Image 1 (spheres, rainbow, N blue to C red):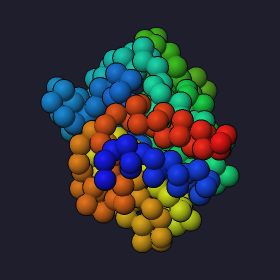
Image 2: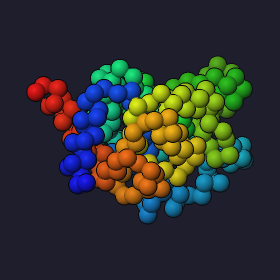
Image 3: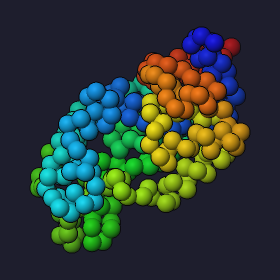
Length: 251
């Protein structure tokens, strides 16, 4: 089946307003200019994960870790949501049953207007007090003080993101599984389908009867299982699907 035919078929399915779950990964943000962690220009090509993205690294040298996150926040602040983010945010209002699950920490989905969102790995614009475990938003760019301290108790703040060696928040993971159980169609967009447990979510949805639609620049381990694999930029394919959905509704 050619890409155009697949796009039309997916649009036809979505036009019936099934319960929809969307899983996004770094590829969606990469189209806005956010550096990815994998690939030839990935962040891990420049920095070792064990030096910057583990609890041990933070306790060993919180200043170094925060300098890196401050640099990342400055880069992310300059980018804007792309058409993929905007379509996903619009679909939230169109589909009666909708959940967005993202592996991204850049906050671009929220900036685009998404609210029914589960951020599996946290958010780079939130910080957490190590003493009180209180989570708060912090959008200082650049940071006035590195490492930043809690304004209430003076304790060290850490980025509210999930590091290597840490478990995903249990409540968010449970909500993600529940979304997969009740989903009639699941779209997997811009993810390598390698990082667990996110990579298992589409297979769980499929086991419970969901149609799986993959949108990615190239094949992934999920491609073999997907009902429809659409290869190309999410920022180009999603607007095409969106246009077809509402064109059919108007006819």
